[in-house]
Image (cartoon, rainbow over all chains, first blue to last red; front, side, top):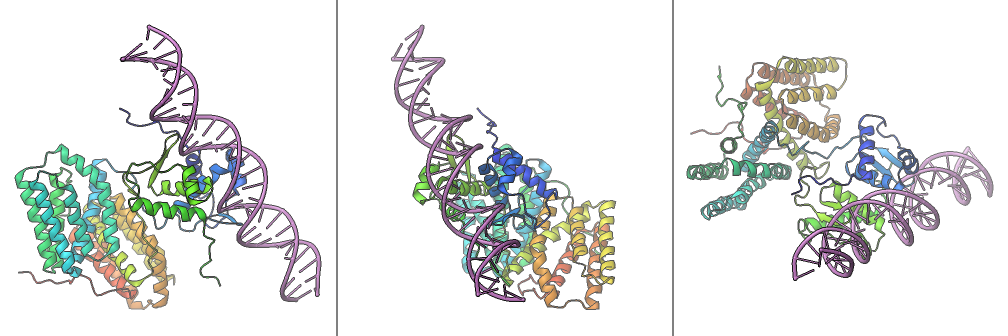
Length: 244
Length: 244
DNA sequence: GTCTTCCGGTTATCATACAAGCGAAACACC
DNA sequence: GGTGTTTCGCTTGTATGATAACCGGAAGAC
């Protein structure tokens, strides 16, 4: 079994990295023109093709911008409009940090869903819960139906950014969650019942147009889920706080 | 004055878009091998160079993966690890949606900051507030110091993902905010005093390790800021909600 | 002095060729 | 026949040279 294929190191990637670092390090000021492809190809001792491929990468990363007949220019706002999670984050603490991000956004999604959800959106949430129950009864793990539940809530918020960002986070957490789930055999009947109750609490609050209750229910659900997966840290804000 | 340069449409971009859409639409299953560069170049009636540039783009977008001698393959997790804001979002509603996202995350950051902030982190927040006051008294707009305040709070949460994501959101909102600010002449003395008070409320709560109060203070601040910029919609969750 | 034209340099595209990696078929050998 | 090796074709990676489109400025026309 091959774990990590040597992956022939591509020249263009090497050049793109070096150029990208140089730009980020400030060797080229914002708006400044980079050396021409010909000059770069001589400096790096590679063909112009390689330089072009490297440039193409830098363009995708929104670091440079090229204009025919003028040259390549360093963009003023490096990598704006682009967000990447540093690593698939396999460390427990990194995972907890991503989870914190998710709790915050998903709580907001639930809250906004309670404000904006219309009948079809509520029906979609209901349907996802129903399908999850069916899947669990059929012996499936229900991960896909669970995903749909959270997606339905996010969609009900009528905020496309919330929805797409949560989808993004979910995609990054999914496999790790699947792994943790298979490890910590979390399939006790009472767990299943608990999850169902938590989902229904969210649905009820959303349907009742009670934003605060929806947010609390969603946070509680995620907090419980985190616990069930054995990922819970001890740095959550205390639920109770002395109020003078 | 040229507002939108016609920007010669690049062939490679066109091809990349079409291929990307085809992949996202599911014309090619995950893991499946794409047609060879030669075949694609014939199908699109362009040179292999253009196909290569388009592929380079798709690789950067994490849609495909190429291996020498084998071909190009559709990645199983399309665009995971990469999040882009659809558009710089100039529409008022889009802006409000991004703001909702920011409120959620920044509130969580303040809450976590109250839990995890150590002395240096608190000092950094204090320093940012101080510098903001100095800038305002010097007649500057204080946008940069304000940025540092929010960055300091995010850093105090000790969650790097929260910090980098907020930096990302901030970079996208900044220019729009600057524009709105210059429009709605928001430089009344009482505004300045109000902002200062709001910042200090956040600082006080964080320093007192009171997460809920910190979150409320931050949300209140952002809500006020949104109002001052004339961007506030009427879909915020009601502050009071009847509790049985 | 102002407008037009031309020119050098740059990127965008095309065409061709060779090198390197890979899989499978053909082959030699036992 | 079964097994290990070689060869071959296809693919992407890289190199090279040429042409087209584009731009800014300089030279020239008026």
